[in-house]
Structure formats: C-alpha cells, structure tokens
Length: 279
Ligand SMILES: Nc1ncnc2c1ncn2[C@@H]1O[C@H](COP(=O)(O)OP(=O)(O)OP(=O)(O)O)[C@@H](O)[C@H]1O
Image (tube, rainbow, N blue to C red; front, side, top):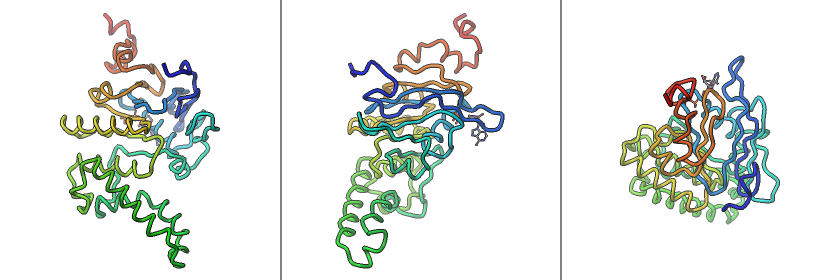
C-alpha cells in the first residue's frame, strides 16, 4: 500500500494536474483535465491522435501557459509545491522537470559528450560565478567541469553510447540519438522526466532496450511521465496510464484496467458509443 489512499496531491504525488484547460482560439485542446503522477512511478499519457497529450506536456513544461487550471510539482512530501503553471519554462527546468521532444532536438554538429555538457551549462556557469570566477581563477570551476564530464560519461555508459562519445550527435543512428536525448535530460538531475514519444521510429529491439532504460531510471528514483503510442512499451513498464480523448480525460488507472476499459477501447477504435464496441 502506498499510504495516502490516492488523495489528489497527497503524499507520494510528484505531479498534480488540476482542472487543466488549454484553448487555442475556439478550439479546446485540453478540457478540464485532472490527474496525479506518483513519485517513483512511470505514468503514461496516451490517447488517439489529437487527443491533447502534447498540449498537456507543453503546459507542464512551460511552453504554453494554461488557459485555466493548476499544475503543481511536489518535489518533496510536506514541502510547499512548485506552481508550475505560473513559471516560465527555464524556471520549470530549474525546479526539476526535464523533457524530450517528439522530434529530436540535439545539437547535431556537437559530439554526444558535448551535448551532455551543454545540458549542464547552468551548473557550470554557476560554478564559474557566471564568468567572473573564471577570470579571477576560482578553483570551483575546474572541479565542477570534472564532475560534469563524469556525469556525462555515466549517462553515455547507461545509454550504451560511451563508444560514440566523440562522434557528432547528428552522425549517430536514429535509436542512439533518441537515447542521447534521454541521457541529456538525465544530466540535469530531474525529479520528473517527461518524454514525448521516446519509442517513435524505434525497431522492436530498440524499443525493448528503451523500456529497460526507463525501468532502470525509475529504479534509481526518477519519476517519469511518458507520452507513447507504442502500447507494448506502455503496458509493460507503466505503473499508471492516463487516457485522453478529444481533450478530455477518459481513464486513469493501472495498465490492465485501462486496457479493458470500454471507453478506452471505443476511443481507439473511433467509436462514439462504447456499447457499440461491445456489440
Ligand atoms: N499551437 C496550437 N495552435 C492551435 N491548435 C493546436 C496547437 N497545438 C495543438 N493544437 C490542437 O490541439 C489538439 C490537440 O493536439 P495535441 O498535439 O496536443 O494532440 P496529441 O494527443 O499530442 O496528438 P498526437 O498523438 O497526434 O501527437 C489538436 O486538435 C491540435 O490541432
């Protein structure tokens, strides 16, 4: 038992989404959606094309300012939550939320290692006293730099990219670039890792490898929020599956319960009435 009886925003919750609505002109892309993600869980956000998944992600990570509702990050039980809906994107990242994108966004001309060092730019700049310390010869910077390289190497190792550390990111095979994106996000030591379709374009062997990587990240204590169309991956690794359809939440439960939910089946088959599906 987890101990809080599933209270919204209760202890054990890392992310609380409450009454989230996002309108684009007359289009309601996300319509009063509420769900919780628990600390140490893998929570999947699924739904047919256009259901509103990426819009929810964009609200959580500060790319969009929600029209209504609240998004709270509970970094520690008992501490006041961080009101993500009121923060700019860079402050959301600083609060401990990292994300990857549907389309890969690495620096293709930089090496794999350099991409992971860029991710730690803020830490390195802080250690240099925002540049002034480097001029004054402060000793903190070389140490911070060594630590950043060690962390980057650890994640290159964890994502099986250590042999490719000095290759330009753009020259890596597609599956390796996807892993490098996850490594880059992990180099910021997030409490919540948000991944937008990490299995897109992967072959079955690479999807298996991705599933193992995400399970190991969870085992090390990072909570994961995942948009994914690959139901094999979703059902295998998720603790909870949140389902959107036409901007509305239609289910939020354990994978087995969601898979058997007539509303979810109907949404995926494009049927308006679940009774029709049953028939
Ligand atoms: N910036 C925007 N301006 C206008 N409409 C938008 C914008 N972003 C998303 N939408 C619309 O909002 C709805 C939800 O889109 P969203 O990309 O969030 O869905 P999704 O579930 O992520 O879909 P997919 O699985 O295809 O990526 C769609 O109708 C989309 O066209």
